[in-house]
Length: 93
Image (tube, rainbow, N blue to C red; front, side, top):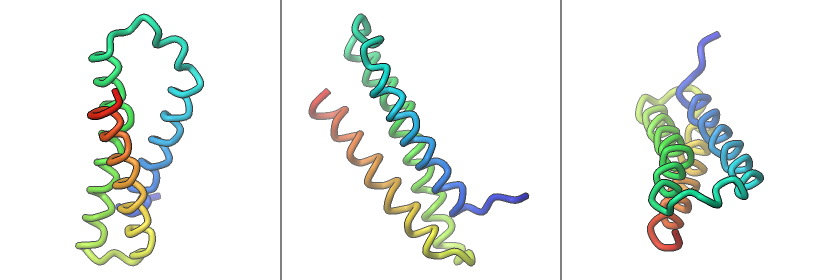
């Protein structure tokens, strides 16, 4: 079974959400870690997959694949997720 670019985009969004929930549930284990390490982990685990998902969604839209609405949804959701967590890292974190 071949996964389309739009499907991959939504899959990466789902993965980002699952990782976000897991990090939130097990946040108490991060007590002894430095702020810099926490920012790096947050970037690698939350922002980077969402950016890759946004790129896959944009690529699917440019190629005009058959599931345009999936690609647009993946692009929008991944962009919002990545932007939000990047702002958290830069300003709150």
